[in-house]
Length: 129
Image (cartoon, rainbow, N blue to C red):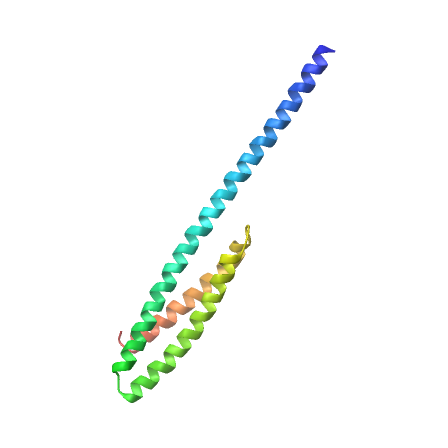
C-alpha cells in the first residue's frame, strides 16, 4: 500500500513537473516570437522612414524643376505615395496581428516594401536624385 501511494505521488509529481516545464517552454517561445515580431517591425519601420525621406527628396526636386519636369515628378510621386499607402496599410495590419498571424502577413509586407523600394529607386534614377 505504501509503495502504491509512493508510486502515485511520484507519478503525480512528474506530471505536474512536466506541465510546469511545458508552460515555461511555451512562455519562452511566446517571448521569443514577440521579440522577433518587434525586431521585424523596427526593421520595416526604418525602411519606410527611409523611403518616405527619398520621396520627399523627389518632391523637393519638383519645386526646383521646370514645368515639364515638375509635372513628371509630381505624377511619379503621386504613384509612389499610393504605393506607400498600400505598404503602410499592410504594415499596420501586421502590427495589429496577434500570435503567429503576423508571420502570414510578413510576406505581403515584404512584397509591398520591396516593390515600393524598386519604384523609388527607378524614380530616383530617372530624375537623378
